[in-house]
Length: 181
Image (cartoon, rainbow, N blue to C red; front, side):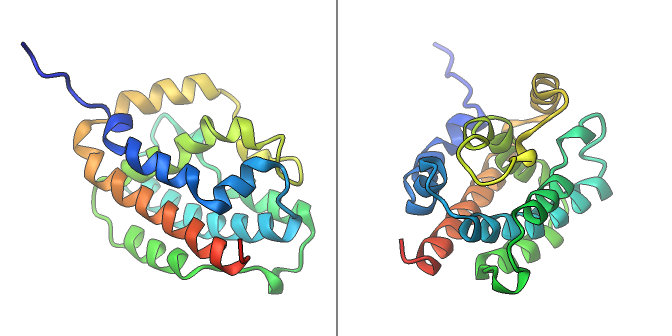
């Protein structure tokens, strides 16, 4: 009997579940997150996505899926919330993650998978539960982006996708601590 090949979803599922159980993630999903908390979360994402997308562009990873980029939409969402930037929390994890991404010579697609697929899927739920318009969760061709991105994915991205999930969980933990959740 042939052994079933594991997908990236299978390889990362335990970490996906761990991320969803985090108190900050639960706050995001609850619809009770306030503007300051959400703007702080977005400011961290903006820093991460700006570097991630720059690295991915430099490695031609986003060729054919350019519409997946979120940094500009995240920035617009932050500005829409009108929260004083000086009061926003930037987590230690964010700096560690940015350093990791900056040094990544390959497998950057694993981080696109982890971060951007979360926006393509879970973002559709979050959009109606967070302050503001949630433009970061709006994609011109959502189904097409999912399909085209999936065509680029390979199982050898699994270990780095787990690293990406580790950073996502750590960011949630930092924000959980910061906001005493």
